[in-house]
Image 1 (tube, rainbow, N blue to C red):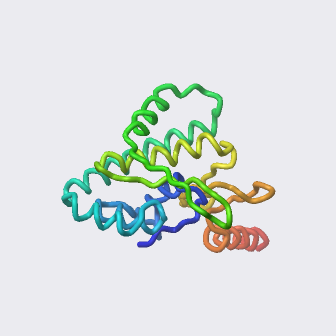
Image 2: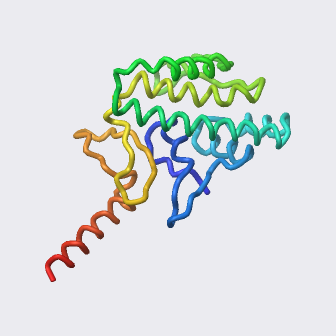
Image 3: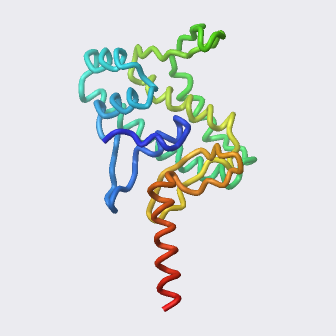
Length: 198
């Protein structure tokens, strides 16, 4: 299954790799190959780099890193729930763990030309698979540093578990997707009104 890409931030896109579809749990990064494919689909990893990783490391090694990323996803989701409720708390153990993961990164920064201006691009270079969780830690760090806790939201749709960053002007976004969860909510409210009027 292709990533949904409804969250508007890579850290939240990772949280959305564990979802519920038609009442059944769905895991988008169940093994190492699925993790690499998801990273390519979301733009976190170049297809050429993914192919190199798949050749250089065994399926078992890739599966282990996928398991570590799933564990990180759970940990990050739990922390974000607490951070949203208490953004000024100290979170020392969480920061220690996050910084430990960040220390495993081996990024290369490169100046590129984008839309007529210079920009710095961080390019991951994976000498070791342990650096993949560091990439996700960097995305979480970016979210924590640059975004408001109140704008990191969970979908209000019944049984929906997806996250998103509310970038709307009025910050009133309630659903991961207006076309799916938002529409279901409207239909359910309409049916409830119909039942009540009978």
